[in-house]
Image (cartoon, rainbow, N blue to C red):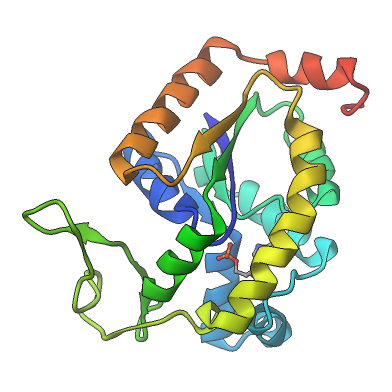
Length: 234
Ligand code: AMP
């Protein structure tokens, strides 16, 4: 199963991708995580990405396509993958279609969440300052959201993500709104395109994503015919 998760920052793509990757035994490939790791490690890519990410802009299509092409070529992605944060532009989506030739169908899930809820979530979001792992919210006994006090992976201290400051969040939401329309237009006619209300309880969202998976499995290959009919797949 190949899955693309679209949605604004804070929509819960990462959380859902993580859960489903575990459930289906396929890798979660987050372009944001790959870039953050590069920044953390101080590689050439990381140096290039740091300032762009801090101001909430997008890296170039060329760089992002190179990263994803290399990642999808690895052995662990051959049986399927969940892409989180790519494609973000129509150019990236077009090249992804080319990369998918011969790899079977993919489903596209678009999470919708109102801006006020995104801003609320991003203000609360934390990551580990030592290993960079994201800290998911957990439920306390009463079913309310509770933030862990330290990293579940390495025990390190949790801090806000550096690009979750108000200015960068505003910019990322603007950039997302600008790119989303053409991307949705690109995918909308495919039977495996699903819009899911990401403002619901995370467990409900996971349930709806699983239904979309099941639906995608029932329609292997149909997206390609639909795309070809609309002249979007060569
Ligand atoms: P994310 O964790 O998906 O919110 O991504 C964090 C940041 O990484 C974004 O604000 C962009 O600066 C950059 N980024 C991640 N994925 C892409 C992409 N597909 N195209 C361009 N920039 C990206």
